[in-house]
Image 1: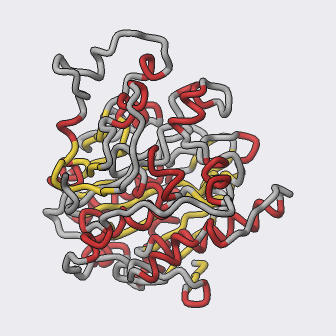
Image 2: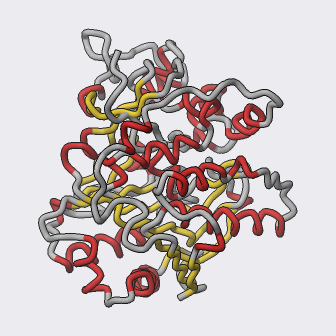
Length: 406
């Protein structure tokens, strides 16, 4: 059995599946498999005598030589926020305002013009992946206008449209959220895998859309069996799990898109909670870059978001994080909950995703208190960020984080 190499974890889960996730309303599968049941993770973590922590191969990842782009990136511990109340309201999103916010944010982060900032992060021949979060399409998903601003910046810098890839783990969710070739001409739109929704929900007995003639998931070829996050945790063996997760062993494989094609990554999560924690920069990649992840939620909790980002395939390619807080959510996450959203109209910028998430974690705790949501401030909900600091991947101590409001 292989124990070395890279293995990763997946995104929180593709909960949105159209109506499926009208929060709470779907099937047991939707509430459990797709969302990972965040409240249950908390209950598991709160047990007086939690089970022994499963072994992983994170030490293998940490041995790999670092580059100048390796996390925490060019600006460790620096977080910039840009607010403009005109950016979004019930009528829609103003792309011009968002573009101006984006430029202000990058310039405040780097201390250089938007054009000169390009050269800090990219070369014209880079293949740049823009990792979006399409969960809760139209309500709390990554705004198309934020991605417009990033694509325009890359194109002005000389990156061909064909070298830009908007991606997520699940192909159908990208389309649901508006990330289509028609909306982004010339730009590639790619999901790491497919999933048969009808079969997953028990509405169809025809598995031919996701199983090939040999009984293997049709998306197996999209994952790199030589690059994986190993965790000594067994996965369920049932068909619905395999349909969603591609593999059900003890390995979570990184997508070939990341290992074979992309040279740089821009991470564009959404400002929202996951129970008493957050589902932002680190989780968007920690649970979105690999398959076979639902097995990891309870035994490893948020540590997955730290350990997966320790692998060079992410650690050395992730050059910028832009957290989309135009419309934010303080409760009910990671799935969409309309009554718990508000127009924050703020974008957050950092090369250091752990400093970014610690800053946003503290901000969302404050918002939850303001809205009189019961808050559990146990350190376990942010310990994974401090863990990252111990591994040299980021800055998590608020006293060491430079938070700039541009």
